[in-house]
Image (cartoon, rainbow, N blue to C red; front, side):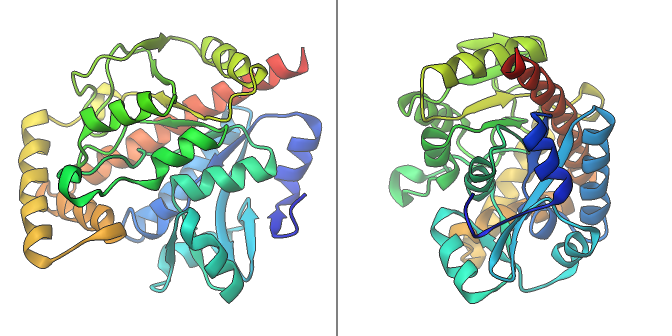
Length: 306
């Protein structure tokens, strides 16, 4: 066990017993939503995973350690502090060395989950290839992490502010399976479909778990994307989201927003431009992914014990 890991007793006991555990990121708390909705969402998502018979393991870096499973005090600190670093692979060593507070992105959460022995991770949406990447080379480290770390990520596709076609192509090139959960097309975060066809579809947790188990048996280093569409009742019209994204991108360009500040800026602008409807949709899709993630983790635990 890595000496930098601090695993909560509930999570440690579940892992030791082979019970299902679902990792959760913390950037969605610190950078993805405003307070108090972020804290309410974090607590609710953990409750959903427990209701489904699995153990939640929200992950963050604090006080020189990687915390896998957070108490309520640390959850609240992440939700309210203004000096939370946004951590990907490149940032983890520096924040651990400084003893600072850091929230984990998809990439950093995958790293910590793998170190702890957690195989399933639920989030909102993965990062990807940014629009205009052909000149900016702005590609999320999430995609590289998916190619090198064997953790399955349940998400509503990639964030719709991205170039989804290029993101899907990049994942194919890097050998990362993208499994449509009850869908033949890549979900587009706030919308149920991007119109981009997927090569793989599975309709039950057991079917997904079988793919993950076979991939592990082959010794593949890559993870997998489980693309789970937002519930229909909470999906937003494509035209509304496209207009909001175009406006938010123009605002970001005008204000000189760049690098890892882009995604939280755009998401916040889209919340304002949709008068809060995108925030409601975001919470709904995260909760849905947590529920599906817990069911897949349970099915995988049963397969592993067989």
